[in-house]
Image 1 (cartoon, rainbow, N blue to C red):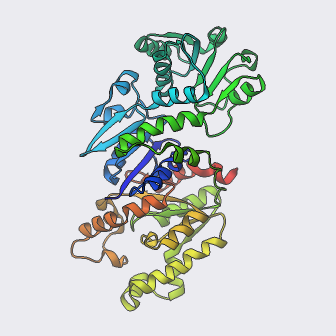
Image 2 (cartoon, helix red, strand yellow; image 1 turned 180 degrees about the horizontal axis):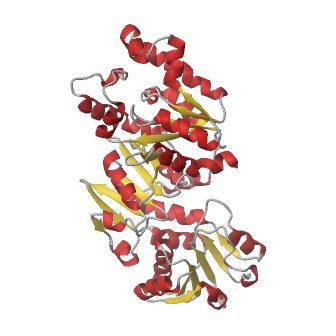
Image 3 (spheres, rainbow, N blue to C red; image 1 turned 120 degrees about the vertical axis):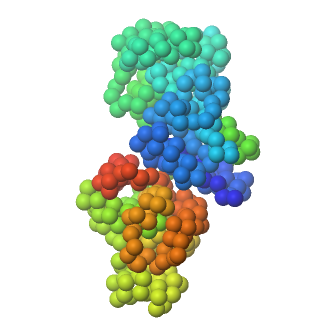
Length: 435
């Protein structure tokens, strides 16, 4: 049976985890796909995972601690740290693990840095910071946790049995230190460059781009450990939790270091009828100054018939051929938000075009919500059935893996207005368009 996995966070579009896991699935010929889940809260992430049928999640900032109350079980490291970065589903139970400890230890070992007996500083007292501190303590290192909130630093240090200092005393923490691990997310300069020296090794957890800390540390002559090593070495045990199979580390490493794709210049919305694609496409277009395109409308204009009538007269295959022709026009489109038909993912060539020309986003809603949004209009030919809810459930099951395989990320539309959904999507990807 096809499996779906994802990384959940806010934001999440920057995550390179899909590269690694999808490469690993290909290497082992597993019937699985890995995508991203854009959620506003940890509760929303787990609720969506259960409803969509996601078999495992990686959890990233800011949900590592907040996700715990929504899980069924925790492993020892997750319980001690108070943070989860991996959730595996088994028989409907969601079990939380923390593989960040392995990630830190693997990154240090591969870089040739032995922290045993050395003074080390962890910047940040959240889930990633606590995992880093626990990893270092397991080697016999002397660990100081530094955080903006001294109370949070002291709480973490009390649990892990190490030292704590406020950010105002970072100079004291770094005096004589051999290693600095930063786990905070900030665009500001938190550490003055004068406090960095050649004797210091720096591991920055934020791998998405060179932070000010990485830039300053490089200029100061510090040894740098690539944050992608942490990502890789935490993913290897996560893969085993997900699949039960040893991870193909070389394939994952190669995918992680592969040059990033060029930013696409359009957005495509996919999902079943009733998920809100047309309405949300217009909302995003208005918000971002883009052009809204509706593939179904383009087919209707070409045919001179409503889609329901086109199905009745010419059959579904004629519609799919016309739909494919309109999708192929996306190669000549830029700066658009495209509402794709619910069945656009049924053709492999459509998937290739959508993924090559757009940032595809899967809009999720449960069957009852989809039917309530559509109403009894008779405009959706594939839903004209004596048991419409059963028909929707069947279509979801048939297309769920195709949507996951196409989407760069998915978003649960339940309980959100079209404007809220549009803002969430645009906030995830606007740097792609503005950069």
